[in-house]
Amino acid sequence: MAAKKASSRKSSRKKYSKGAGKRVESAMRRRKRGTLRRGKSGRGGKVKSRKQAVAIGLSEAREKGAKVPPARKGKASARRKSSASRKKRSTSRSRS
Image (cartoon, rainbow, N blue to C red; front, side, top):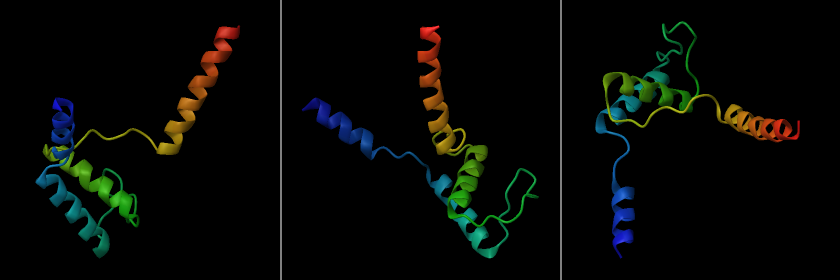
């Protein structure tokens, strides 16, 4: 019974703060207007992807100190490839 309470408490805990949500909303609005730009200095061109707009909003929230989980590094496909290559490497090393 106690284990069930702990799991329900954990799921109800918020991962993102209100401030983080506001930053993401702002980034989405700027994307719609066409003023959201990619890159640190904003010279990378307009952001067209919704996912990228959300990522920019979350990174802005992190900079301001809002409660946001840490960013994942690299693309998902690149992470999958690197983990697969690590598995291959470990077997070949043990054989030699």
